[in-house]
Length: 108
Length: 118
Image 1 (cartoon, rainbow over the protein chains, first blue to last red):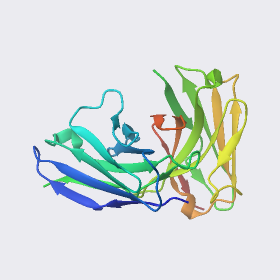
Image 2 (cartoon, rainbow over the protein chains, first blue to last red):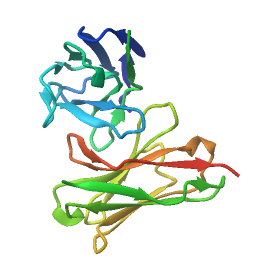
Image 3 (spheres, helix red, strand yellow):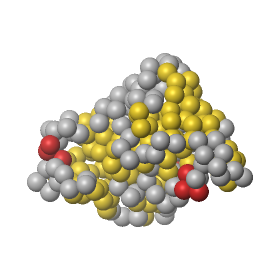
Image 4 (tube, rainbow over the protein chains, first blue to last red):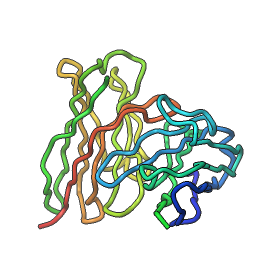
């Protein structure tokens, strides 16, 4: 099983500032990594796949980077609607997807 | 626009079998381009992928749940279903049905909470 570890568990950032979220894989997943955003009471929404490709309709303030075992999701100039929980997910080991435990992005 | 909707009992007794159905609209399960999956999320916790089914009936399950999981498909109704046997309190979760590719999970149902309790 590929274990995904996200840090920090909670990140407090002020609106308008930049947020940087990290995800580490227990073994190389190449660029086979996706990021999802989940708001309370809602299903996750796909943000990024291929480590850095934004999904359809995702604003340009969301960007992803990394490869191998280290990945980053950056949200520049945080908007109020961006405060949510973010999950990384590897698909290098498809069909057995595994997710990180999530990072909660909260308003500072 | 593809939509998925879960349905089934919200309360299951310990040791019994959890059964859920997902109805797909706005697209055909038989299109062949996608896989149809189940994912769960215990309250306040992260996401766990349970397994998928292809329209042909082929399946793949999370190895940690494989002995208890069965996913089936009914293409005539555009539905697929989940059965999880011998449930315990640890199986209490929001269960999502979803459409996936080999890369992403691009459409999700709204999720349904299933509580395991006597």
